[in-house]
Length: 438
Picture 1: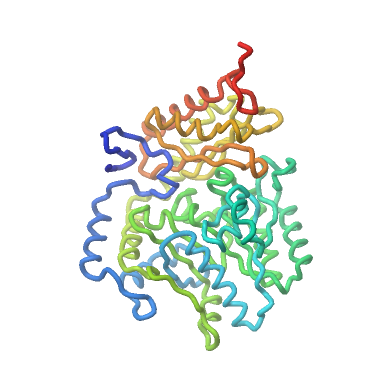
Picture 2: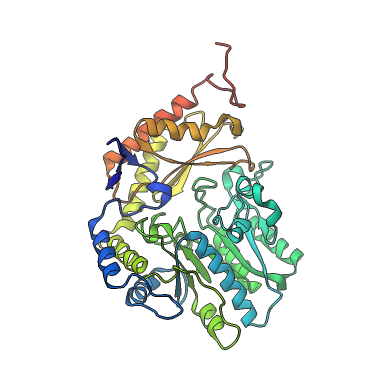
């Protein structure tokens, strides 16, 4: 296989337009020789040095360059190999922070239903995607969950969704008071929900209200920017849309554009200084944390994003993508909502547009659409269970930021055709069985 730009070619030579950046990872495009050159040069000079023994020039340089872009005050960087490791690191940092302050009772973390934070046990316990949790429920249950900020399904039975910031903040306040404010260590959420709900953007009053609740109770605000970071939403980071600052921020995916397994946690100066003060310290580490090659790759990706103005490109091309989708299938009876920011764009599919009734999971609508689009040579990303934890189908688009206007047009036309074919009137009922009345 090989890939260039927004095109992936398989072993048989067939080409596919990457409308999803893999798993919403590739932001600067495939096959960039300058990144490969940096990777090789750094590996030839220093491939590995354990973070407990050395810091390295690539990591120090990267931290200095990425720091001013982060919605975190006076940030310090702890690099890891990906998003799940970043979330685990953030959780442990939150615990270490409260221990260092003499508040050993603060260990509970609150997150949201309809969220995804990774597949390690700690990250999975945070996550609110019920289908992923079910096989491991016996090992989960340490953390608490509040409703998703999900206006389209606010109030729907089983959706566990709220539509305005004031109500969401009041719910969070209630959960904190019920649990005992002195027991809550952190609140974790994605600024814009990615694959689990399909690019759901919260109402504009949501993040300021949530941040205020956290500050008043001494609770650390952890932003999961694994999918939304590095320009994916048309700003450097998702929280930038609301001017909110995090105490801890987890990043991965677009940080290295898929060229190297790399992620990091950014801790505010207050968190870092508190944890590193004399005392128990931060007991943590991974074999491949602080990787010099990963830092060199991430630094080159950062340079490309800046030099080619790709964050602004994500914003403008995302607006174009949504406009074309609305023009082409905005009134389609099976398209409930088209949403997102930048080049993180989601479509929610419904069996009944008027009532928002989802297709039954047994119909496998999202999977069929992904497969049909692939038949036509376009790769898209799907999500399921958004409506009530079981039923519900979404399609997520997240092409590289270098996508051309012609390629955007092809993504829209192919996805629209795939949706029309799969959801053709009368071809299936809501249970997924064939309609044999015709």
